[in-house]
Length: 110
Length: 245
Image (cartoon, rainbow over all chains, first blue to last red; front, side, top):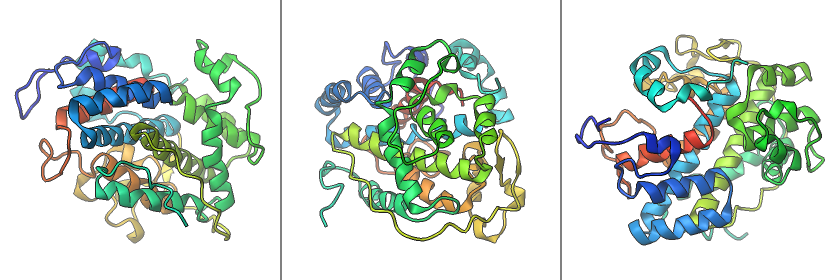
């Protein structure tokens, strides 16, 4: 997968497994930071935070925490209200969703 | 009174710094369907849910719906409300239509449900940010007195999920700009059944992420991480929560 505007290449499997940086600068430590916060694990978050600050600086750490916090909202709003993916987005991402196994998460209709 | 957000890092952007105390105070004010006391009790229960043995057991089960029991709770909310707040906080990726129907069958009005969801999410987000940056989550505010008006948004229609929402074509003047800039994403529509709740929710979320994700790279936004890192974090967080959206 490539960035539309930058031409950079990204491996989005890192989004699902958290085991690599996916080609995103500092992706591995950002992934660990997201994991700590999303699991409400303060010890893991503290360790990951220190790594992010060391590699990227405090302002970057705060901006990263802000994005993770925001994405503790949107998925919850979607999952609580059962909203589906828009048709156009579903069509655009059909291959990607298959590759990443995203449909495994689509259990809301049960 | 001391600043409840005094220990956020000095490098925190001004728009985030400004949004936090407003979001916290709005938790305490009467909503459209919940009193201030009920809203603060929901926020308190969000924190409690992380220590709930039943939630922990359900989180580790193949299906959370095979594990029966009672939540460890603070005693201020009805059982049906706990069944919203706790799983929405600890295991949101496995919420189902049947879960929602059970909540409704237990007597929770659709509009109440949406406001409880909104308050729960705002509390989760505020605490997530504070834990992330290494600051202590703020003390919850004292509830503000007053009664909710409990007036249904008559322009709402069922869908696109299992709750009613206000579609772009049905908005009334009070939401005239809500779908501006073609922001018709379903995620923006999800909580519109309670229009009064929308600024309380989006005024916090927009500075944390961005108000218009369609901008090329970062547009005019000032961030200390790049767009690829932002979207990577967004996708990774969604995956960790088990969300397909």
